[in-house]
Length: 365
Ligand SMILES: *Cc1c(COP(=O)(O)O)cnc(C)c1O
Image (tube, rainbow, N blue to C red):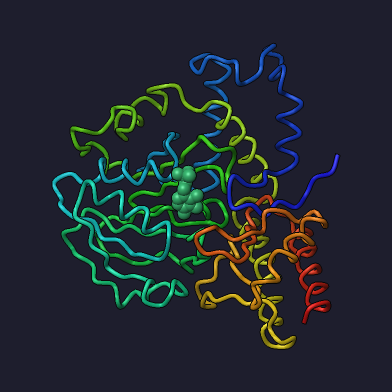
């Protein structure tokens, strides 16, 4: 068996020990005589798996007592509708900070339910930098301020949590959740699909401040009403049981690595290694590789770059594949290359990528 270094943006690589444990427990979970996939979600075994996963996620993120953690379905794009349905209440508008493709998807969906105010946009700078906080035109009457903490396609990431005053801050954290510690108390709501940095597709994480519950629009589907989901312990309807089980194993794995501070240190090291190679390429070796994202908002999770001569891209990707470095193609909307460096990507994978880049440059530079 050969495992590759998988740089996919999502669904993405999972820690090998997690996959091994899942394989070992596939037919018989801890003496139950069945697979987790075959269990009743209301039976004692799965109830224990669910409670354990919830508790571990809360502990990892140090979620304050006044925030609910919900396990839902529908992905981040589902939440783009579910969040406004649940949080709009008596308000009429939502403030958006537009930093790229995923922010725009969120804005388009929210516009079905509310007036969308683009308080700032990176479109003016070609999505190379997050607009400076002083330039945001926020409306104190807005239901909430929406940001995308890490733009998975463009490769822009907030260096820290922006201050938006008393209006609740809502963040799509699909591609950066659990990559470093985060001060959850500063957010009204955090959401994200699990398939980037947590587990398999199918599970959606929502962390919401309790005082924001109970204001859902009457049209909100009951299964997507945060209050209902919270009151039923995320079991109003059948939750994505197997995805929750795997997520629980990933949470344990993160704990064993030293928790989010350890993840943050590793992720910073991996990203620095790749960005240094890109910067050196630009400065010292005539610039075969280029990254256009401004230094202060470079994503640690999704490093976007391209070859100055795009006709070399196919050869670079083919050579990477031959070396077991896969899924490095950029998103179809922006093209170029993208290396996703989530928690499960080992440093050795980035070292192998940087070595291949140097070899390619020596050949073509
Ligand atoms: C992947 C991604 C999405 C889309 O998530 P789905 O789970 O496919 O709905 C939305 N936002 C961000 C930031 C993402 O990375």
